[in-house]
Image (cartoon, rainbow, N blue to C red; front, side):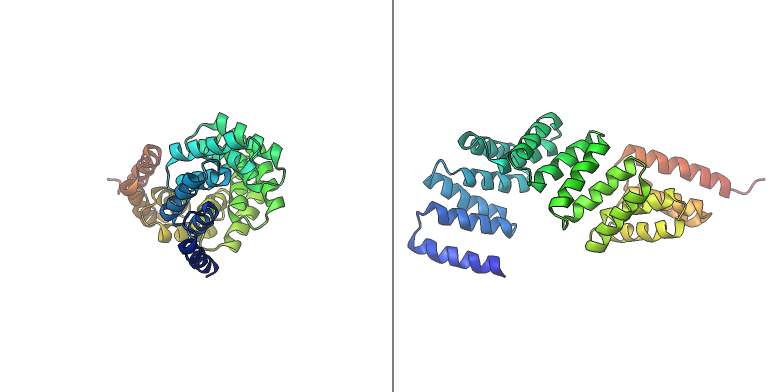
Length: 279
């Protein structure tokens, strides 16, 4: 592909110019595009060593650390990038996402607001802010930010899905249904929307359709306890007791969430009580 060709070209150029920071930076970015973050770090470290005030290299290294789950190091690099350029919107976005994943929502919001102020067309900033609003139960604000994301980039599948979740929380079921449909239509391998559409279809008493969606989730993630729980609930509504019991037992078996386990166990108790012949 084109990234592999770019890698070859930069590697060739570096043979003749091994101390060119820009070439290390460009090859590092190419590795990052290929999701080879370890090699990206090697080149970005070199670029920074050669040019200690290389703002973009700090940002890209921060992103590589972010994707490797090194959130502390990522935050340090975004801090450094912003020390060198206090009006660098992408660095605010990167640091905002880093705060978001460690659930420091106040700082995440401050950074993402700043990014939006500096760059009104930065769809990643709106998307990140939407995530923060959603996680802090500000669903209307979340839906608006996901809509803004899609206005700027209508190809972002996850933004349709996330907006669907916000609509669901706001009880806008038709709008949620539409967003889940759109996400699935755009990326049929994206499993999360099937689960939430399955739950929504259950709420609309469309049990056969709900089952079809939950089947997809269980097939993709055979250890996903909450999918078994919901499929068990749908089987219960369809009076398919044997199937409901089988699913709820799987929910208990795979559960790492106390609430899911408790709900499955309570339903099992009821169903097994019903099944027992009365003497």
